[in-house]
Amino acid sequence: MSVKEPAQNAPGKDTSGKEVPATAGNFLRNIVESDLAQGKYASRHWSGRPGDAAQHAAGPLDPARIRTRFPPEPNGYLHIGHAKSICLNFGIARDFGGTCHLRFDDTNPEKESQEYVNSIIESVRWLGFDWQFGGDTNLYSASGYFEWMYRCAAALIEHGHAYVDSQSADDIRMHRGTLTEPGKNSPFRDRGIAENRDLFTRMKNGEFADGTHVLRAKIDMASPNINLRDPIIYRIRHAHHHKTGDTWCIYPMYTYAHPIEDALENITHSICTLEFEDQRAFYDWLLGKLADAGFFARPLPQQYEFARLNLSYVVLSKRKLIQLVEEKHVDGWDDPRLPTLAGARRRGFTPEGFRNFAVRIGVSKSDSWIDMSILEDCMREHLNAEAERRIGVLDPVKLIVDNYPEGQTEACEAPNHPLKPELGKRELLMSREVWIERDDFMEVPSKGYFRLFPGNRARLRYAFIVECTGCDKDENGNVIAVHCTYLPDSRSGSPGADQYKVKGNVHWVSVQDAYSCEVRLYDRLFSVPNPGAGDRDFLLDLNPNAKKVVRAQLEPSLRKASPETRFQFERHGYFVADRVDSKSGAPIFNRTVTLRDSWAKGK
Ligand code: ATP
Ligand code: MG
Image (cartoon, rainbow, N blue to C red):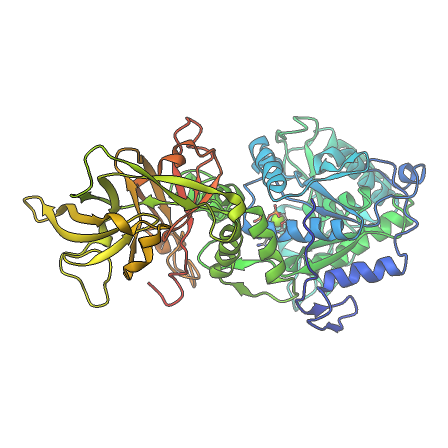
């Protein structure tokens, strides 16, 4: 990763709740900076792989100044919201001499799969990040820690901080209390250590059915923070796990597993989204107790929360994304209409665009909505700078140049990029018949129309000026060909080119060598900013025009475009050769985004 981001400027609060002004970089970076200045984490040791205090103590000082982590659950594909978290965690680690671990939070056996694991790895790499540091590959799975987690639970039992509860799930729920009322102690809360040890061992050995017992932390059923009312930390699930198979029939709860994963990996700054704010107390309680027991060394990892990304015109909930895919409202997880990173990639969105987006939206402590146009603008900006120009006629009609000699052709030059002459030029072959855009001709022009209509002159871009003479129609009155004559001394770049003044510019490709191909015109997935607002079914807000397939005529060089090459089709927008459907060798193009925002004032 060599891209250096500028300091981020969104305001927020520091650890003591003090407002950090908008000019001081984002609040998380400020925290890291101040921790480093104080040498807060300088004494940590790292054994080269995750482990407990004893294991790390035997290793050298941690060469990573800080460690962050990105911990997706492999129960779906990553989406644009995850990109924010990825850019944040990997970006901070990179900029402060640290490393960011990619960790699969795969402690929930039922909904996870290797397909999701693979797609997540591919997406994080695609965004431009990696998890190599020194000689270590910091790619981990929470399921690799089941043994450690089990030992932590055993240690909690030995110190009187956990007990086996044999109430039914309903009773546990009922006795939790509410925001205004304290909970009620379980009748099993005062089980002795020996009994707890025995029951927990037997839970692990598979002696009990699902739901018969759970292991709970012993904290305080009267705590004003409901998350501290003896949270469940282990449950029995006779389920097959995609990594550990049938080794385990008890699985740790996420809120218990997560702090332990962080501590095993020597994480310094554990950055998560705001909904975990109320869990921080349990995070600290658990690691504190395990540190007291000698299991982990201080300083312990610390949790910080930031506002998740809410983006208009899409949904970023895995549940809804799964529904869209499973009910076939879209064509799979990498459908270019979806806000998944796999979809965004096929759509032609760029990693650079995402990284710029992450910087532009900043990081804050309060929830807000980001408009889709900001993301699209970030993509446009990058594509405008990078993408070579090509000509594509998306709704073709034939233009016949009646005075152009039959069989004659001549090469006209077009620059690949108007601002980057170093990208060179390409040749467009002028001939008697060319494809033009259907709406570049009007038999009866509307006011202000200055492209082709009978008697009017316009320039065939990079070629000659033509004068429109009329059109042919079929029996239904549809225009099937437009006629014109050309002015041989008007060729672009020739000395005579400037003697004619015309307003209209028409793009074209020669009929004889055009590449006729499928082009998909993608647009926003939903037609309203907040799909499913209120109690409305979000499916009702799907944009029926989010995918339109046309047969286009493209300039011939596009026939050889390799998958994922991005172009600007002049006047139309940015397009990418589809990475999936181009594998056969004949590329299909997907529209990434139009040249200008057409959604700003409603369509
Ligand atoms: P689920 O919907 O299953 O809870 P999730 O969207 O929280 O899933 P995870 O796989 O748990 O997905 O997320 C991995 C990381 O990405 C978490 O640290 C989470 O905080 C972060 N993340 C998820 N959604 C967003 C979002 N919209 N904006 C920023 N970060 C996000
Ligand atoms: Mg989650």
